[in-house]
Length: 403
Image (cartoon, rainbow, N blue to C red; front, side, top):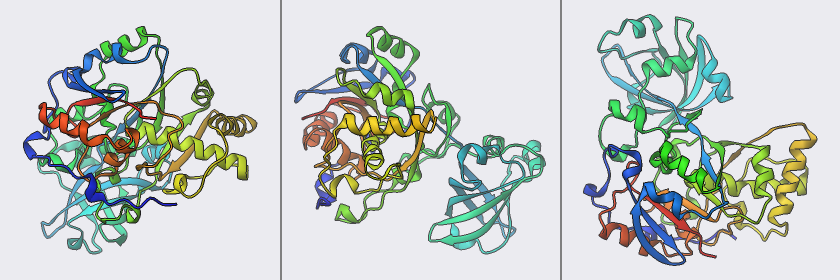
């Protein structure tokens, strides 16, 4: 049964002065709120290794943010911003980034009403010769509201990944209320970012440094990666008072077979770095159930965790998923998920969570509330009253799940 949740119950006062507009000079110097067995405390992030359970499995999202925001100009002088969301022709990320000459993407279009059927040229105010030679152009193939299908063409034979690196800017969150600056190219990216595809950073990972990672290894904690490409939907507030009307966008993810085998061990806790890692890990259970019931996994629907009781155990679901991959000689599971985690959700994979402080009335607040069995307000009151910095460039928290 889909939970009936009023999003207004997940509001809290967040003054603009508490939103971190820029990162701290040192990644691991941020504050760290701790929540363990109902006790709230604080320390500095670089001390997180000593707070983690030894011998645990820690899971990071190694997606990489792409400079997906492009600025074009019509002959009339009107500026059109195009924000690449996901590739359509070719539809696979790696193939789209490797494309030369042309590709089609689903995009968010700023100032969309000003763009009719003309072909746009990239705005190049500094008259950069490399950009001029690339001659990047955009053609609108179709539009639905603020999104549309856009065909890009360019002249110099570069791969589209190179086009974005040269012509695009990093799409920092709109709530920062500022333009992208040079510092964002480095700091709005995790240290371990590897696989291109996100238009938003998995921000819980922004605090990790090599020293912190070394400290975690020294605790006997094994580190693994998943890859979920974060979509622009992560910035979308829940606009309807009834959360059941909020649509979650599909986000593709990849999980290695080796990680599935490691998750089978029930004698060690699993620590997720970021809500994207949680959503990936928890989606695996439902993919395994699909293998048991229909022989193969498919994209995870938004509300499937709440529609019925599920009999298979965590181990049975994982074993079915492992068998599916092994029988087809596959080393990776590639799927998409729309899963939404709200109060009432039954966690099957995740025991600890590293996460930042999220926007009021967001799906991420709902996830945190589900993780701590409704105790999110006490956590956020502490953060607000103890000078924690909020949102993407803000401080962090380490939460132990409430059973």
